[in-house]
Image (cartoon, rainbow, N blue to C red; front, side, top):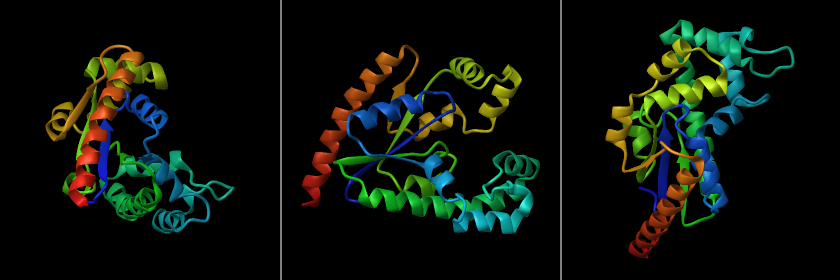
Length: 209
């Protein structure tokens, strides 16, 4: 396990992860986002994009050479095999990119924001010391998702069903931030947890000396 405290941040869609991330960044905590790394490794000119195009064909490329995300999304939704092929290409590249960023991050602890951390299984779990879950009632997630993305309740339910269950996430959690009230209250909860992590990071550093 890495000597510096690593927190794995996760939660269901529309649970409030972005609010938690933003507050942590304001507090000076380095936050490395898996979605940002996923976009970086398939940017134009990157080996990841070339590998994806080789596997799925030029149909996943736009005229300007960038990744055609809707086209790729349609392909992998049609086939579990194609989805697994895409994951086999991208997941190692994403992990490498995140580790590169982590190596240069400054702070007593760092946060790896990984939406599919629980779905990633044991390998993802070993990359962090603690798992922080942002939790919300499913009804709240549905309302937020429909308002945010202008989707129907059926579409929102389908998105939630494709992720790990709330029960599975909570079972995997070391720490939980309940996002059932206002944004200011969630931010205050982040502040309290930040102090706890600073204490844990100091203890870990002391043991490593």
